[in-house]
Length: 92
Image 1: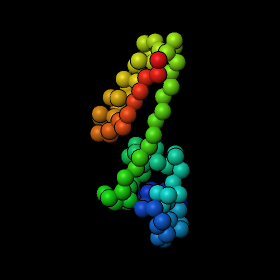
Image 2: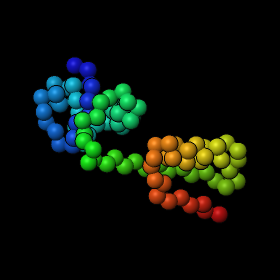
Image 3: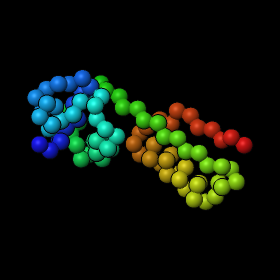
């Protein structure tokens, strides 16, 4: 059966057993990406928070226009997705 849904963590419903859905706590990174891309349907509820961490490290001597664009893209994505960037720092 084709995976269609992501269910709440710990779920063991019939859909999870037959493979039509997967509980959030057993979902793979690929399945989470599919959920965020809208390719899988969320049944996890509005009270569930998904937190992800993105770490970018660029040596200062390599910090060129491409690196700047990458950092700007991450900030633009955060604004678009309405996610808060907890902190960021530059080591010099």
